[in-house]
Length: 245
Image 1 (spheres, one colour):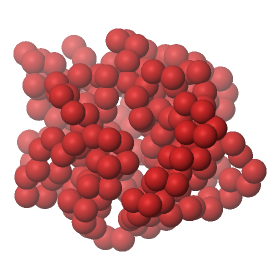
Image 2: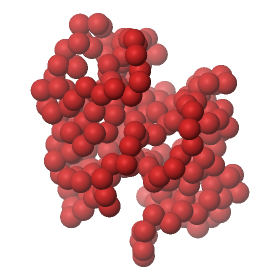
Image 3: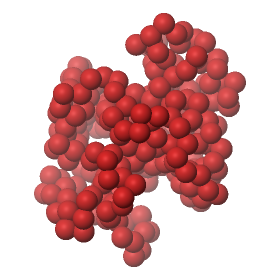
């Protein structure tokens, strides 16, 4: 039995508008648009190929409550490319953001709804990820949380030290999933969360039980009657277990 990481979900006041920003930012397309949900993925994408992690924009129940504990890092290929990407994103509607980063080699921006993102300095490890270098989760114990997500996402451990851990699809393609130790506990529902899906022929209920056994807990995010199951990882980060596909 296993689940695989298939989406990054972003709650937005205006899902369609924010999807258009991220489509332009990443050079991706609007892959699907339904009432209350807009999906953005690379052109020609074959869902759920691990070579990319599609973004799904859904309505937010309220305003962004503070700094996100989950954010996207964008890759660059040179210092000139990094500077050009920053200027391009600002032209699309991003703004510069101050999260206390001081003097760092990456640029911190926010999308039009205030979701923080970083444009990284060029790094060889991200040379073949595509535009999204990594999805970062702030946490208290990166190694333990990476161990859980290794099982939940089906991704392999790439690096782990006391302050940082990273995973990547076993295919060796696409972005990294990274966990960074930061001070402060999670206090509100995450604006951005991950979705996992069982493989065809597997059973959603069995996968939910497996994840609960690994340290997940059931979560109430006001979901009502839905086909997916809301859980939280061992540090309280919400995620959804979708139906097999």
